Length: 442
Image 1 (tube, rainbow, N blue to C red):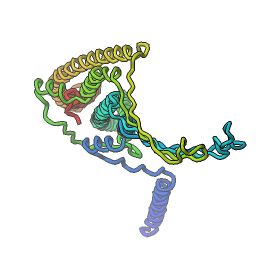
Image 2: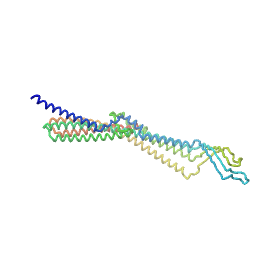
Image 3: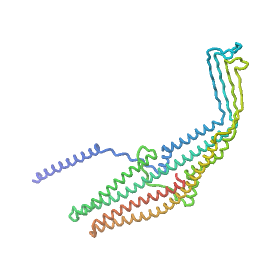
């Protein structure tokens, strides 16, 4: 009796264990075979590494460097005008026959060959010298513009980096809220399944859980875009992630930042270089009224011209050529007026840029002060909201309140954590704005 009653149970247990094992194996196989491969984790870089990679490999920097090379080439072209030039010329002429003079002598042969080399040396060429100086000024402008491009790229990269960091904080706040909602739902479900809770409590808890799941997924989607934007700026082949620590240095005093804005901002230096170049153009207007003196030397060879006493076969000649511009229809006056107008515009742009730079510094400094205060308050609010959520949970479990108070406290805690993350981002952004406005970044 005893043995016969145990055997069927044992066989049933073995069969059930085999079935469970088969299901587990099938599930594992489906996971391995059917599930998509998990993407590799994106590379993680520090802020300094991200800025360095962007400045090294971003195409905008390559374009700025190409502009410097172009300015170098134009400088070479301009300087070539006041260097000696050497030009060789050769010609061959075939006539239908000898050309005879009235006396019957050959005046020009049937085959004529001529060759010469002309050397021109500018002795006094003020226009060429001035054009060389102006081309050199343009090269300085290209260099200053490249520095400004680097600054703008570095700031854009830093902003993209901070956006990724901030999005991680937002995800953390949403995931904390989801974990809290999951715990509340599990508790409400257990109470309802045990016959001591209410169905509406379970439904409310599950609704809050699903809402938090939506927020988490939306935050992760925003993080994907932020990582991709950072990867594009530093020319990576995929998304790029950040590290947790972001060091932007100690904030400057307002006076030091204002002084740096006048002396270190690259966009201000570009405009200062343009003003200096324009003033040099105005000063060099006199060169269009000055004479030009050149020396020309020309050795030659010719064959086929007669008589040889008048046309030597080999010889040379030299000359000094002085040219003086007397009247040009008003072109020089128009050039002078144009350059004076450009200088006025450059000075106005420089004055506007200086005022804007100082305004940027003052605004960034005040924003940093307020952002720091807001961050302190936001963190305190987040701590209080989490404490309120704990108290609401305790009261609900003690039966003193409904779960509406728990859900409201959970939402308030999530909102407070998100606000704290946004306040952290605002504080970092304000420091970056101050560094950028004062010309100390990168």
